[in-house]
Length: 179
Image 1 (tube, rainbow, N blue to C red):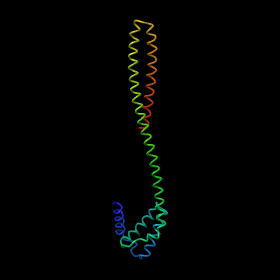
Image 2: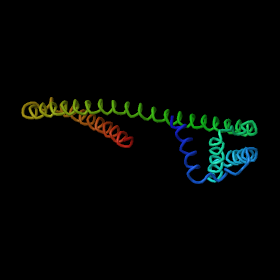
Image 3: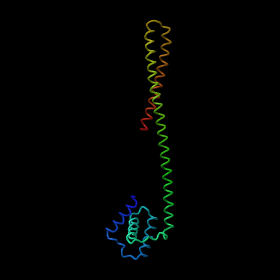
Image 4: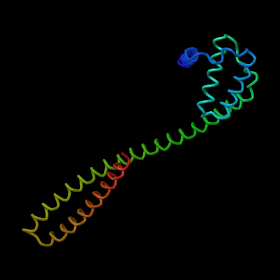
């Protein structure tokens, strides 16, 4: 609906600003519109060509006559082909962006899950280390042979805890970079 409202607004603007093409004959009006359309197609970013074509089209609308579309059919077909090519290019770009975003999101989700597992591993290793320390403290009072083995286990657990903390920190840093 806004496309029609835009056309009506443009025609009203043209009429309000004085209808500068009202004195042209119908044939001359059609010829100028076709030239303006070709110029607009050849330089789509030019506001001057766009405004001229819109004003000439508005004059056609106010006179209730049809612009000479058949004169610009080749230019119109070229414009349509260019628009379709640009849309396909945009579609490919958007598709690539969506794929990258999906990959990044899935990587972020996987890393989040790894971080959760690493946090659980850190907590579990901390509990084991705390229990082992407790055992070492009890054994240090009584048995020296068992104490050596308990200290070895405690060192292994502390190394395992350090690896768990490194993994957790690595996952957390990846998540921080992605946020």
